[in-house]
Image 1 (cartoon, one colour):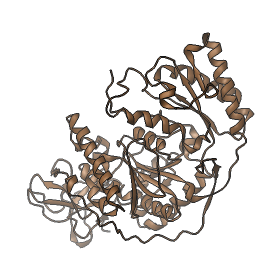
Image 2 (image 1 turned 45 degrees about the vertical axis):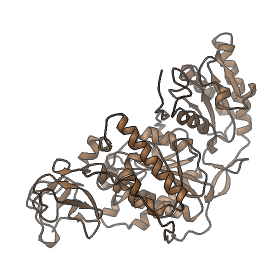
Image 3 (image 1 turned 120 degrees about the vertical axis):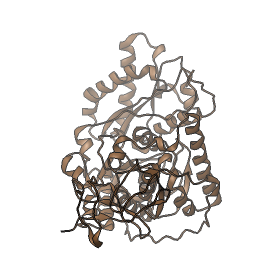
Image 4 (image 1 turned 90 degrees about the vertical axis):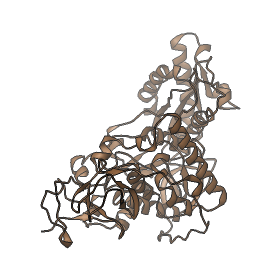
Length: 503
């Protein structure tokens, strides 16, 4: 029986190995291709001779150039592929009339929480905002007490969460780029999953004062530690003000809400070469369904978009959106240059072990999770989402930073693809894990929520898997199902993006 490989585009001169355990030297494939050496699963095999300096093509795009002569049937990897230059930002264009055929989605609802400002939550959480890292220890103790002593009295409240961060003092509060962490902290506090209730804890001498963060904050929503007499008074004040808010939050109950009220974030981490042909395009189909239903969908990770941005620019709906996309790409180019690293610093050792040769190949597989719909808006880091449809929310690619920044932009549920596996999760919004390969699902059977590896084996189509992801989003958003990570209580700390100076 011949071995299987996946070739994405007719132009491609490489394909990825499907078989778990990889292909052994001498293995044969359809068309008479023979593996010249052992090639791991998900790694690339040369479909033809590739002379030194010639283009290496995957997804119909140039992912690099051969460093040496590569023989047909040989293993193609990061060692024998040289990265090409990035597409110049100034060359990006759009006709602003992107053709899009929306998938059929009938009227759909989810059981969510309706907010007074017209937004909809997927969770009913009491959040405690911190203005400075100094108060984190106190707030963590208070949150533990609230969870033990108060939450049992208010069964309609899902949880209490501390919005801790490492910002607020020891920083140049008015420096260039300081607006990024400040608006991130502000907009996290306004997330629809918090029901409009605001409780803030301040130390009292920090640079990020409560009044700088919230222009109209009053004593009912604020605890200043330096104004209290001792630890017990601090605890009493936090507990008393928390209980007032819990009483109001407890009046909220899940009700039927339109799917158009969802704000869905898309992210990937621990990617492999299967990600771009299974999990990510299936998520992209689900994204198209969400957009067709009127929802707000965001994708991110500038460094994992940069080398696929020429495929995204033609989908922008206006000159303003295109120019904002260009500005965010250029800003990040300068940001990386300032750190004396290039864009290929992004792929991890695990990404490379999973068959990704460089950031170009990773990017081309990453952008497909955005689906095919028009891009209606672009957000700078920490800006709130403004429009229904597909938005690019500029963030770093770090799982924790991207998740935090998407949450600050209004994300109420996230879909996260992985090929290598990660236990990343957020307390403040559910994170659905989708594996790109069946081997990972079999190994992490109780950590991965949905397996997209059955696309590679031909058991499911992209459309079928996309619809499965769409339905799972609705079930988790509505509280009918829980993710494995939520079942186990696996939660990572929030990580606010701060490119501004620390003094």
